Image (tube, rainbow, N blue to C red):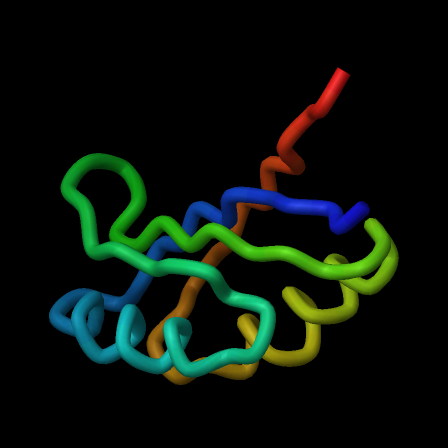
Length: 78
């Protein structure tokens, strides 16, 4: 069973839409939407394990130009 998470993303001013497009193109991203509020983009992601998810965020999401901060929220399935 895959691990899923929401990744809350803050961006540099004026880059939310380009960040959203770039994040949507990353393998493992199910959806990425530009939103208002304290975060600019919210992405839903999946990976085989929690470690794989963390590696994906650290290596692919953090590499997107314009991202200043992320907050990863794993989805619980109890």
